Length: 350
Image (cartoon, rainbow, N blue to C red; front, side, top):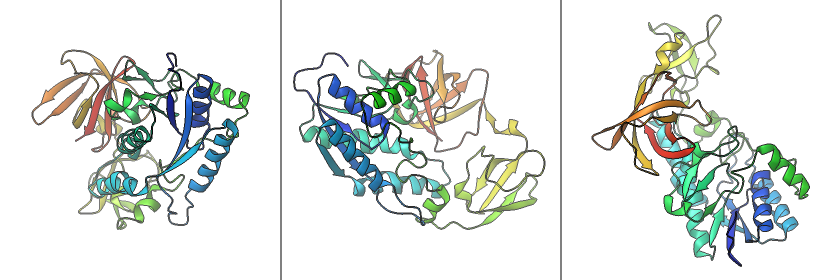
């Protein structure tokens, strides 16, 4: 965080967690003029599960008071519902496996929040993500166990030029130590889990608020009924847990038919391995080279496998794995391509 200009104003997304708290503290220590912003994205309780937004806001306020900085509240609920929640629900209803964290970072945190902050007088924005920006390009965090570039790969390139990720060079353990050193009230606060905006609400309960989920049959590959599911849209290709069938070898979701409302499972895990798959709606931080070897992952912190790329008509790309195969490849997931530690880009699996 060198080259700080005098009185350079940075708006920090202050979520109430330890990561964003340390981010704000570090920026203050580096000489920035820091303002905290709590993004009020979602406040609705789901199926008896309380949304944690009030606790989060209370925590953000305590951090801002401790640091002596202003805390603004941006009410982004309308845009969040239309650009993240409704898109996610529609994708599940179509049989896809979307990632709301990717949607949130692309549309809300690094578009809407960024634009509002800049219009409000911010020179820069910052968040507590574990990632690095090197010469305006996205790169993996130093802590490989916390790296969040999978969720960030679609962040707008123009926003990246004026964004800071102060935690990108730190290990998570060091972040906790800094929080304790600074006396931050979030030093021992647990990390948030679950859906990115509603906390620990089960996916079934959340989707059940917005779409009709009907029970149906779980079938083996020959069509025999093995059990019942709670709604075919809830299941992901390759899923093993939560099927309610077993008694011998583990079963994995092989396919799902939303029209027939059936889920087909297999015990043959090799059937779930794919040596290539296609991606569309791609974004690139730099132009891919056809003959170059890259690395690819298809889920957050998933295995990175060597691959090459081929371009297809209709702005689609084929990811060809070089050796090991990915398991549980599902339409709607994201494949993120890396050139070493640098994020090359990626797209949605089709």
